[in-house]
Every structure is written in C-alpha cells, then in structure tokens.
Image 1 (cartoon, each protein chain N blue to C red):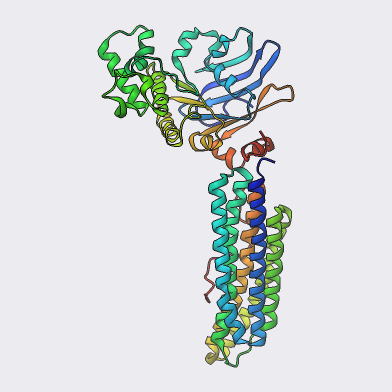
Image 2 (image 1 turned 45 degrees about the horizontal axis):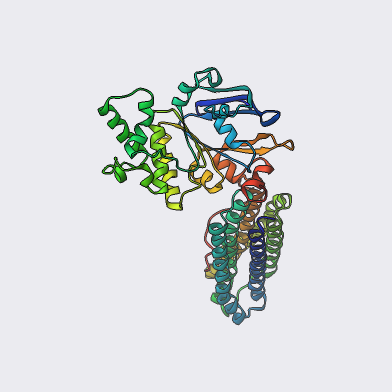
Length: 228
Length: 261
C-alpha cells in the first residue's frame, strides 16, 4: 500500500474528530442539564472548559494542514481533508452554543423564572442524536446516512417555535419578565443553531463522496450564539 | 471520447489513433482534442504510452523503423501524417527531459534552427535570438555572455536555452517530455512559470510524472493507463481542476492519490 503514512494519519485524525464530537455532545447535554439542576458551579465549569475544545480544534486543524502540506493529497483524500478542516470548525462552534447556554444560566443566577427544561432537553437530545449520527456518517463516508439527517432538524425547529411562542406570550403578559424571556429565547436559539450545524457536516459528507458542493435542506441561518 | 471535448478551439485532434511497434500495439484508439493556447499535461504510470503519444504529434516515432500508425492526428484540421515532416517539425517544437544544448555558443544554439531553415541575415538572427531568449526568461541572465558555450550554463538555464532554441523557429506547438525532471525545485518552478507565459502564443503539451507539476502548471490533464495487453489508452481527460479534485474514473483517483502506479 503506497500511502500507508497518509492513511494511518487520516485514521488518527478521524479518531480525534470522533473524540472532539463526543466532547461537544457532552458539553451541550451538560449545559442543558444545569438548567434543570440550576447548578451554577457546574455551569461555570462548562463555560471554562470550552477552552479545552477550542484547543483540540486548533490541534486538529494544525494536523490537517501539516498533512495537506506534507502529503499533497489529491481527489478524495483532498476533499476529505478540506472537509475535515470545516467540520472541526463546525464542532468548535457547536461547543460555543453549550458555552453560551452555560453563560445565560449563570446570568439568570438565582432569579425565579420558569425555564422550559423539558423542551430544551428534547431539543438537545435531538440535536446530539443528529450530531452523533451525522459525524458517524462523515467518518464512515456514508452519503445515504448523511442525506437522511438534515430533515430531522424540523423536530428541533418545532420545539424552538413552541418555546419561542411561550416566551413571547409571557413577555407580553408580564412586561417585567422581558429580560428573562429574552434569556429563554437565547437558550432556545443556541439549541436550534446547534442542530442546524449538523446539516453543514452532512453536506461535507456528500462533498467527500460525490465531489459536489451542495446545500441540503435545513432552516440554516447565520445568527450568533449570543452567549459566547 | 469525441473531438470538441472543451469549449476552446482544438489545435490538435487525434482520431482513432493507434500506434504499433512491430506486432506490439503501444497506443489504442486515442481520441482527443488538445486546445489551442492552453497547457495540456499527460500523466500516467510508466510504460503506458504517454511519451509515445507525445512523439506521435511531431512524428518522432517514425525514427523507429518498425513503427506503424493507423487513424489520424490532425493539426489545424490537416493530417500531420500527410504533410512534409520537416515542415511539420517547424511548427511543432520539442523539449526533452535532459537539457541537451549543442556544444556551441548560446547565440549559435538559439540561431541553429533559423539558420538550418536558410536564414543568414545577422541582424534578423540577432533579433530572433534576443526575442527567443526573452520569451524563455533567460535573456537577462545571458545577454552579456552570448558567445559563451551553452554547456557552461546551469541545468535550469540549459533547459531554458533549449526552450529558446525551440521558440526560435516560431513553432505553434511545443511538446515537452518531462522538461523539469532533471532540475532542482527553483529551476522547476521557473520552467513552470515560463510555460504559463508561453501559452498565450503557443499550444503546449507536457508529459510529466510529477503530479503536483501537472496540477500546478496545466489547464487540461490527460490520464493514460495500460490495458492488460500493455497497450496504452486514455482513461480520462478533463480540466486539470476536475481531474485533481473530483476525477470521474477510479483508475484516475487511485493513480493521482498514489494508490496505484
């Protein structure tokens, strides 16, 4: 096998991307769980440990750039490495949503507000499930699996719309709650964007396998995380 | 693959071209068009007929007695195998793997071709030598040493001298067989830059084993491979950007990503 070095380094990077993905999944699940427990120390830990994810992303980016420079890949290898560069960036940005939720949680502090925890948990679980399978499809380069995931974003969008309506109705009925309603909206927005970004990963899986850059159907928009 | 594969005007068209060395078929059913004023690279594993095809374009293969061809190669719509070969080679210059300047002065090396075609006027020869050396990106380095031996130049300069020698007879097509494989990286990049500058006036076809060179320096890439009977055929031909980012054929994919060949 003439490209053993390249293949073994690609396998290492794939493993590291898996690991980064699981760190991101854990961060978002933890951040939503602290909304339930209102454990602000834990929220602070999640906020601080986003740095570990950032560092891992840069280390991976560096490893990918070194492979591009030293192995001079073409065709599918080139597409894979180019896609990996984008995916590690997506994962890091997804972790920022967990950090954003932790920050809002700390901001809410001891205030007595009704957080729709169950809805947020469902949004997080759905988003994490999509990420888990989306990243699996990416690593395995399975276009069929990747193509089926973005449509599930509708589930997250519906939950977000429900949270959104409730928060707005509450703010209109109780103007004194407007700041808290805003915090709820931002949490929902972060979770909604988290799921959107899975679509970008799925698009890259199709790029690797077909060579085509195409937009898949999702309610993708480009607003900020708001909390980072 | 039929002619008119690309939007560009084809300068050279091969149509059902086959080449035999005695009983051995070296090229099988080659159908391509090579665009004018563009750089086309030919890549593929050793022994698959890349250089044989290149040499077919100026009929250098005829120097081997057992060679027989069928089909056509046309330049500007005229069958090159039905033309005067000396006239053809005036229009189709060639640069080889190792720089091969004549053991003559730099000036005489470049003036060799025009003189061989009967040009004697010194002023015109001087003009041709300066223009050819300038186009070959060598003039500034040698303008004060034109009487020195071409063999005294560095390898990279010698190769550019050979390019200048090819340009001096004002060809329309330049064939290059691994023109940079004997050069260091800087000299290689100079040749690649030079080729880029030449394409506005010439049609360039280059055989290379260096995949990065094909990717960097050419507009179109032709991928050759061998059939089980060892005859060469074209696997895939497309824009260089397509071939190196998203080849359509698995053989191309495996070859350019270093997993075969």
